[in-house]
Length: 425
Image 1 (cartoon, rainbow, N blue to C red):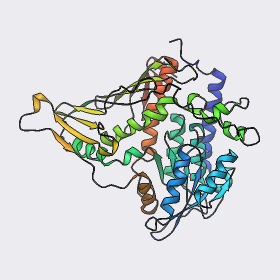
Image 2 (image 1 turned 30 degrees about the horizontal axis):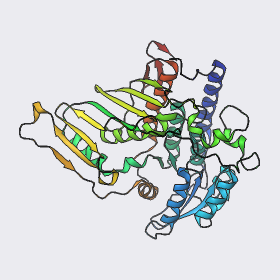
Image 3 (image 1 turned 45 degrees about the vertical axis):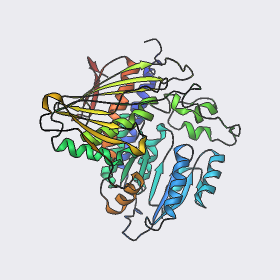
Image 4 (image 1 turned 180 degrees about the horizontal axis):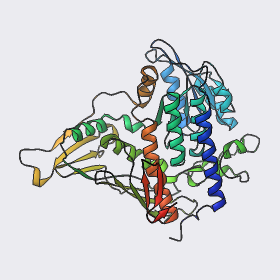
């Protein structure tokens, strides 16, 4: 396909492999932080937020409100951003949290228990691993990492350090998905064969074209800190504010939108690794970006079950969230808006005798933030933990590699290896 962004040069590939190997070795060799703390039932949990734009702004406001509610017994203690105007706004919005330019200095705070990471994708792994090594619990926005290798290293670090990691796809705490899992476990659908879902947008100005603030200059934005592990490039505010359009910092539609759908499906189906991944699509309308504006993914899972995911930034007409079994299907119906959505169990005609269509509504359930806070006290795994984050990232990253390389990708979870359909990568 002639609209694919060219694959990175072999030298770049080798550099990434060497960097990942070094990061993995460091994660294994580094000692656990001596000041790591397990919050007790009555201890106040002190939380810091890294990355205060976009979803980060939402999290600053959300955790300020949670901190004002005595039921949660938390404090929004610190905020961090490399863009000065954002940091100043976050300090003000937080109600007086300490402001940091360098996230590593934030991690040095001995009384900080946890961090929430809402930066561009290419920084997620390094920041999360550093936080775990510093004895902090972590909430990292989806996607958990930029690559599946980084996800593997993050999961291994979480296992070794015993810290809590939650991935921020808030829909995974939706009770309708957990009701779906219960129905599937009870055998209501029979053999699961095919699932679908997607996200569909249409913005005539181009999705992700957020405002580029005129205050952004080399004096207000630490450009080198933004680039971090990404390739070195000249100062360009477009890349900072609209990073999702560029492969250096983001996995595009797979990471921003399909991450929600796949993680939701895996709550119902139970987390697992895909065995085969293939992607199609292209840049059909919005040619101001490297990542595709239309993207489709086909995933084959163990147990003879396929998942088809669709997403686009060019039309709002799409495909429903449906899990199809031999005996019945489950449909997430959001036609009345998200707050009024329901789960519909519809028997297949061949197996409908004695069965009726059923509609399920939400039961009370803690939301994603409440789940993270509770798990930091109980030390139980969150609903979307690092292991599931690893499994989701294998699917999403291999989908992007399939599209960019024009090849079907295979994954072996026992060896933790990927390869092309006809050879080793």
